[in-house]
Image 1 (cartoon, rainbow, N blue to C red):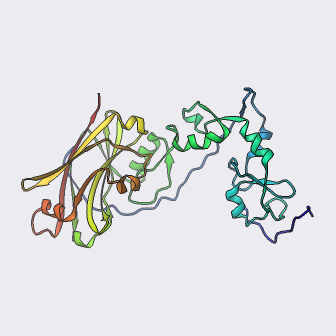
Image 2: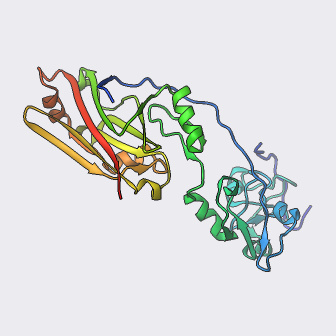
Image 3: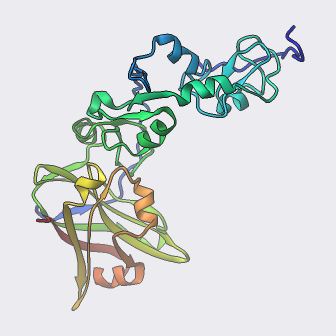
Length: 307
């Protein structure tokens, strides 16, 4: 038994015409493709490290690269801080109590390394200090995007062509060519609906893809409808475009103009920031006409490229 160590009993292992749109049916997507890329390390002297360094910095439980604090058991086996909690403070290799021992030597080794972005195969060729790499990858413009479909919790990720095909084939979303649109969103008994998501629409415009969202939700205590546009690409590319949305009837009109948000920003993040055309329910029903018992809201808009 290692000095100061105590055996654990168990260990957890990780192995554009007018269209009518009704509420989209929820559909769960269960197919998730994961891919692990080979990583090469570069020291500050420009010499590539061998695979032994990679193995030292790889957590044996989750197989991700470890960042401080890196923990070790009395026998010297290491693992990351997240997995230390998952294995209930019990070493997954020798099953001794982990305690609170830091592996400072390995943390120093990591500090001396420079690594390529894990999205290098997608076009990012920058090199980063070990401890800066993770922060960069969270915002890397070459990183894969999450599926923008808002009608279900879809776990598919990929590049833009992959997601466009996925939206068309798996979610059966409406695809339109053109930079102007004129849609009518309908719903019976709107007073009974507090939260609803209508079918996503994708526009092919200027050789790029834009996602039009429309939904009902509670803004504080007030029921509202909201329409907004997201761009299938990174933030820098999104800023090259603008769009407008318009809704109205009976001599009244609401107009929204803005920049589409990248799908790097989640659907919920954009919605909660109210970055789009927000319509109070009473006003939306007034625009719908009739006895206000049915939502018939016509939303028009256009997309243009900034010079």
